[in-house]
Image (spheres, rainbow, N blue to C red):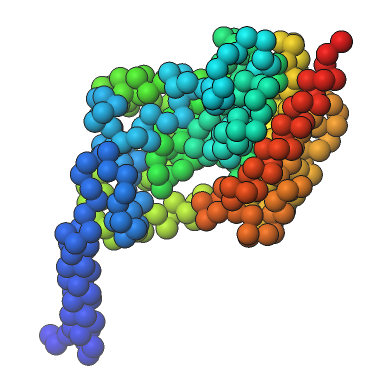
Length: 374
């Protein structure tokens, strides 16, 4: 029986395409291998490009050693239980100086660093995590207030972080980079803010779980139950990690699914006021102010409006700020969100604008401290 006309040529063409893809896949891995040394933080752009789509566990295998010296620097970043010194001020002698503490993402810690340069009257401290969502920042405040009294506490929140309130780790929040730090998942039960804590909140705890398969599997099960952005196709390691083409396809899938989930909370410049994430944010800001005042601290909110997001976050929070009489600084007053010259390519503010924001925040802090004195 003769093959159908054209059928054999289609099969042949398909086989050739598969063969060429296989050769290209192998060639990419050979020509652009990612550095084996986890301490190498300067891979080329093309090496990084083909690495982004590796599974989270695959990234961890490369990044995580049993000690800090044998691990990538990002492994120790952002942990709620951290031994890093939070003091930003360079001046010696802390007796009698008001203590000002910042909690938040890197935008907030950069602001704290700039404040420390300008403000010699106060002791400036900061706790931060890359891309920290409001639930991380709030938990850092709760951890810290149990150990240290601050005269002023500043909570950083960012537009891009609000849709990610349902995450519990930097590894699901920032799939491309895979920061392993963890934080609780928050829920609203009626008007009450509740949370479920992850099995570990320190880098030592992470290593303990990661290098013990049974414990690690329990943690992954916890993620699947509580992390809204957990996806086994992105998180679990498999032999498909070895394919550069699969890694590219996986990254495209990650970006697409993430965008769909984010759009349920923030889309077309508008927040969904009925979403759990927005309702948790509003309650969290209120709880922050209440707990701070209970400690005799002055609460301040630092609102970071990301480029292209307008003043949507400020407008969302303005009623809560007014209702709870919370002082604030919203970045849009210094850095218009539609002005690209105010932003670096990594989303941070340019140094000159960050310094302007710091000057205003120092003024807000000093006004708050004066008003609190009898």
